[in-house]
Image (cartoon, rainbow, N blue to C red; front, side, top):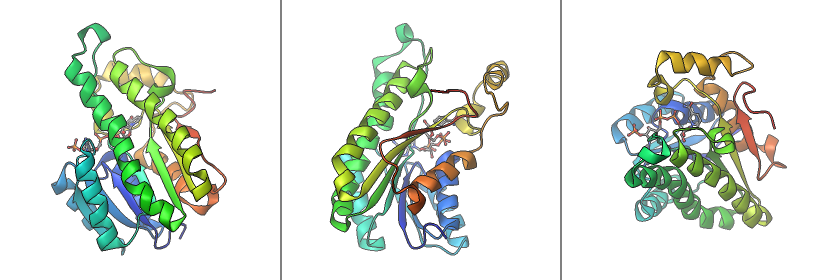
Length: 247
Ligand code: NDP
């Protein structure tokens, strides 16, 4: 049990990669807060976690609103007593070529992916500083490292998460709080299921390991970053992409 009695807050934890992280952490002994805009699905995931014998709390939380996030964190501190691990996973895409991208779609993606990550880090940091320990894991993307035609908003948001992670790691290292980013490649979730078959095929050809990843592949790296095994790792970006991006 690598996370025995730790409390983990996972944004966008209702489905996809966030759900896989929630279940993986629960199997390793953590109690989980599933924070999501979609409360109904968050409650379903919370029930699955309880089925694994851990405490779970489903929380309606839109990460774009700092007041909502702060209130949510206060509720968690009341009910669960602490937040040991924050996983910033909530994320959206609104793709279009730059010339066709609306300002509203730019703002929406930056607000959820980047501002949402800032909001959650800011809201949990005080309690982590007080307890003199914490782990912050933010889900970026390989697109934040290499760019991608049609994803200016998404690429900028994910590159922003990487810079934010490095800054937070430097600011909080002396308080025993580690901050790292995970950059998945192409993972089988509803986000990638929307892609046309020919695009999926092309992508697959670009992956040295030859297949799309699974949410569990990402969750396992998050588990490492949440556990004591990574206590000397901070400010890093770990890609989980079947070898697509090799620095
Ligand atoms: P999904 O769309 O499957 O899940 C995202 C979850 O986040 C959903 O439950 C969604 O709710 C929730 N969410 C959306 N907006 C907000 C918000 N404002 N506040 C709180 N929760 C919100 O995505 P994935 O599981 O595929 O992706 C998870 C993360 O991984 C994202 O950050 C994504 O960018 C990143 N990623 C994914 C890759 C992939 O190939 N799938 C590759 C690289 C990175 P709702 O159900 O209402 O939409």
